[in-house]
Length: 179
Figure 1 (tube, rainbow, N blue to C red):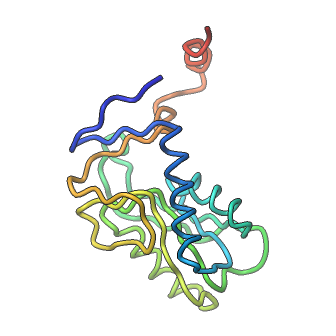
Figure 2: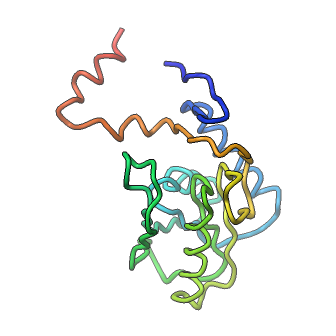
């Protein structure tokens, strides 16, 4: 299946494009020579990116759930909620952290999570952020990003197909992929 053409209002991303973007982001971080101890990804959008970076750099993965896009089928930003706990397999959050999300839309999430980390995790020495896209309306620029989008398009990521899919629809959904 192919993606529709992108415009200033809508950026359509296929799975192949998405995977190449994540790999290019990893390369940008690597080429910076910055060494970090852990990847902290923001769920949900940053989970796929964070998982791949954690694997490539062979560092532990931590997950922090955040949410601000809930209204209008997930297209309108509301108040930011930050989870009380960070999920990780061992030890406290400490050292140098690569904070990963899929995009910097308004920039509020990355900014507030950085503040949250400073306030609640004193063992964190340094935080740098990495995203695939930065919109022109973002109030911050992450340390690492691939594409600057001055027109602030809605980014249609390939996994969004699952947002409207429900378990009772899976049989019909899967049939469209059969030969």
